[in-house]
Length: 186
Image 1: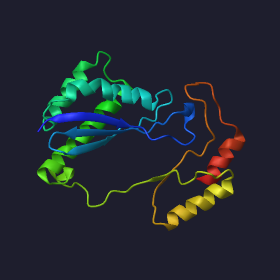
Image 2 (image 1 turned 135 degrees about the horizontal axis):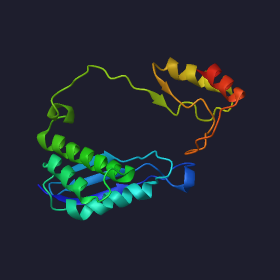
Image 3 (image 1 turned 120 degrees about the horizontal axis):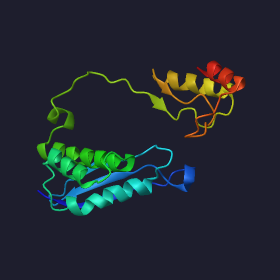
Image 4 (image 1 turned 135 degrees about the vertical axis):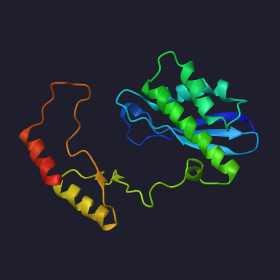
């Protein structure tokens, strides 16, 4: 089995900063008609999906023709190809390719990936809900949405109880009103 194509999808983001989507899906296809999926969303203040896509597509030529079962070797070879190792876009791209290759390995073995990785470690994994607060402008609305989300069985909620804080600014301070609102919401 050989890799025959690598494709990136970036669904349009609704109201995304810089008018760009940050969501990236990577599809690695093989000549045996298997397709592995990896997720390469990068939520970093200055990185856009175009940077992650460029990093994935920069690996495409190397990947085509490779044996997708050589996951660790492919990862190491790709990592070594980057002169500036450890950049957020490059590592996000490598992570998505790695996920897609493991997806292919699971399909080829007709097993869930967690079994290939040594079996289940936990019986249950707690998850948090994110985005449940969207559309709420006032503390009372946030609290009502939190209660509605908890009523669905959620036991963990993620949100940022402060209004947007400037990124990469060392001297930003919260006002007393912002702190009070955050305490009320929490």
